[in-house]
Image 1 (cartoon, rainbow, N blue to C red):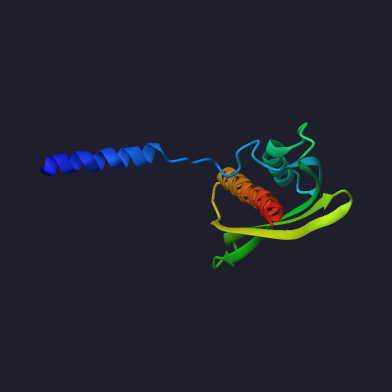
Image 2 (image 1 turned 45 degrees about the vertical axis):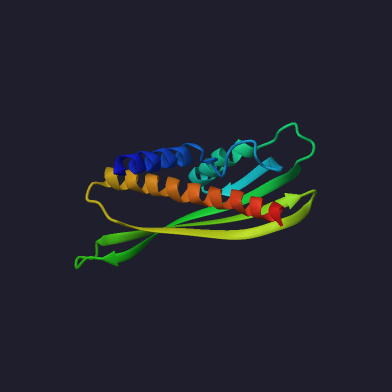
Length: 158
């Protein structure tokens, strides 16, 4: 009797797991808007990462979609958080500040500042430190681009 119940539980668990209708939030082609033009100023690496992410929803031939232009200004700061007894840095903080303006037919629709931070340890190997900083910069930039997309989605849902 207990084997039958176990089989039924496994069957229903498998059925519900397979029938899940999961779709990624930022799936290409599921938006009711498009980005016609992206203008960028500031930190080139941040801008490149954000533009690559936003290019997934760039201009298409659908005339029913809302067409936006985006102006993005980015800045990166590396701050020393703590020092050792000799005055050498122990911890750094990377701060990304991104301002984006969403424009629809010449009208400013959204003006938002995004600040993302990450604290990390100093490395004795400067090459490794630079590699870690590149990874942190990419992760923070991806978070900013996700926030930009979700802000536009939320704007269109209201």
